[in-house]
Amino acid sequence: MFLKNVFECTAAMLVCALLVVLSSPCVWARKSEPAFAEGGAGLFRGADRYDFAVEVLGAGMECFWHFAHQSGSFYLTYLVQWVTGMANNHRLLVTVSSPQGVVMASMNDAVGQMNFQTEVTGFYKICLGNHNNQFGGIRVFLNFGVVYEGFEESQRGMEEGGRVLNTTLTNIEESVQKLQNQIFHMWRHYNFARMRKGKDHYLLQSNLSYVNWWSATQSLVILLSGYLQLLVLKRLFRTDSSRPRC
Image (tube, rainbow, N blue to C red):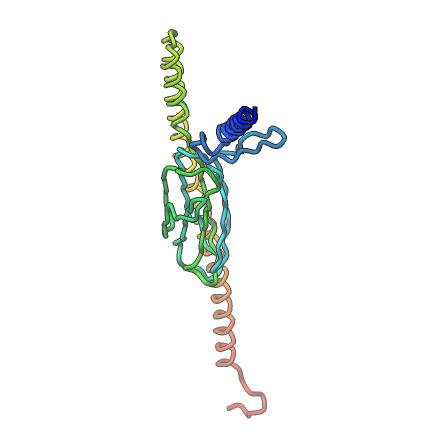
């Protein structure tokens, strides 16, 4: 009777341990997805694409964090639009680091594009360093995000595994998917053209300000030189009334 109780207790403990191991997310999870089980929030989902302009001060650094899931394609496009102050170097140091702190991509140029695969789920750090200018700021336009191309492929594989008989619907889905990818690449080219347009706009404004200031300065110099010449000519023809005339 005693051996029977011991055996039952041991079996119950083994079953409990097996249930705990099987229910653990670290056993079956292949992706490092940050699950928020409290309140049924589910997985963290943020915007996948951003485009905006930011100004980096002289000898300063600006950093941003962008969330990305595993097996995604991370892209970053940046362009320096104009410089302020005493800055004369348009180059900008841009680095992208993984959630573990590993540098995934780095560039030190006025225009750059970066692409790499996200191997770990988490927040990727984007840093902009204006180390080439100590006394002037830089305005840079950013366009970055993550594209998940493997999700559609896995969904297609599940449909093929489930023996989807409606081939017409499958062809329509593939065509829509290709169209979405082409629209996305067109959107990226459009954003890059918008960056170029913004840079040209600021260059035109800078040239207009330069021409206006130099024109005003030259006008003042011409007026001042004319006034001085008039004074010199008046001195040449001035007569002294105290002296007797011939």
